[in-house]
Length: 68
Image (cartoon, rainbow, N blue to C red; front, top):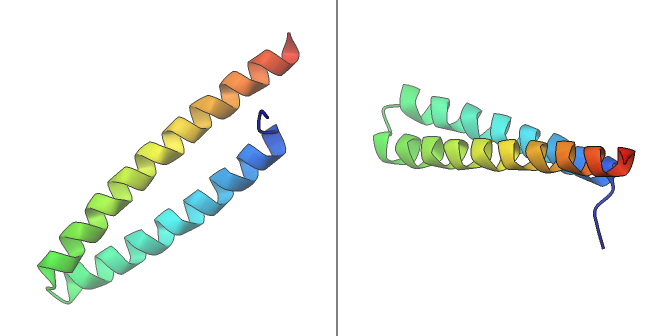
């Protein structure tokens, strides 16, 4: 069953909030000189950014299909 644009938008919102939270914690770990944790969290942040871009592309693609 294809996802609705509203559902994809909701997922994007949740993903963006999660990314902000991970970024905040990564920056806090870096400020505390906890390099191991900061490094892992920044890697997770990058992965979430990639997921967000993929979700955005999917949403655009679904929107184009719906307009046909």
